[in-house]
Amino acid sequence: MPLVLVGSIAGGQPNYMANAHVGIMDFTSISVSVGKNYQTNAGIKDTRTLSINIPSVDLVEKADYCGLTSGKRTNKAALFTTFYGTLPTAPMIVECPVTMECSVRETVDFPNHSVFIGEIVNTYYDDHVLTDGVLDLAKVQPILFHLNDKGYWKIGERFATAWNVGQSLKQSEAEKIRGWETEKIRS
Ligand SMILES: Cc1cc2nc3c(=O)[nH]c(=O)nc-3n(C[C@H](O)[C@H](O)[C@H](O)COP(=O)(O)O)c2cc1C
Image (tube, rainbow, N blue to C red; front, top):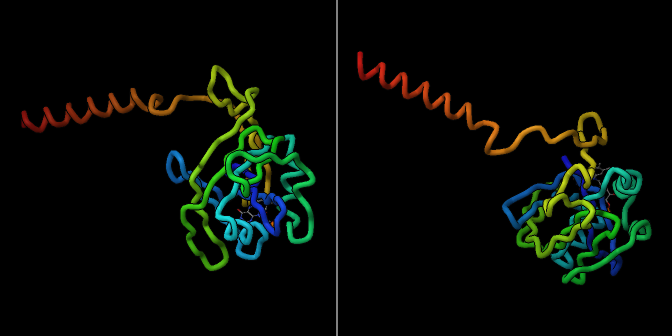
């Protein structure tokens, strides 16, 4: 999973936590699962807003630190430059090349986690991570987290085009089916 930093305001202060249980719900909504004991959980419940910040590999040390310490005891926001978009309680990180400010639409309750469904209000990105106006993952260099080996991984290369690489197989399979149907009719 990509590792993100979830931003919130808790106890009046900006705070960032490391989070890998983040998902895409539809084109404008995300989900993020946050442990109930964490400062981030209290902050999001209080303000009903959050931010998703995508760090590049060069921020790995700070990102990991945000998963090792709690905003209850440390000022993790001091590691970064914070900025705000339109939501005054969704702090975002200048050093992250892609960030989103979100308002909470719904909260799904699990025994130890709250899954916040967030509506993306705005997305911000650095121009230097674009190629021909499109977000370029090779430039974003997101951190990928593997739960089982506890490793941080980098992305590899773009190697195929979606909704395209399977087209010739789709065609040859359709021809096969047409062939069987013709044989069935003849017999
Ligand atoms: C790589 C990594 C991934 C993590 N993913 C999650 C996650 O998806 N959900 C969660 O609740 N905590 C996750 N954590 C743990 C929190 O980041 C950690 O408990 C943090 O101290 C909570 O900070 P807070 O109390 O300031 O909110 C992760 C930690 C690391 C290092």
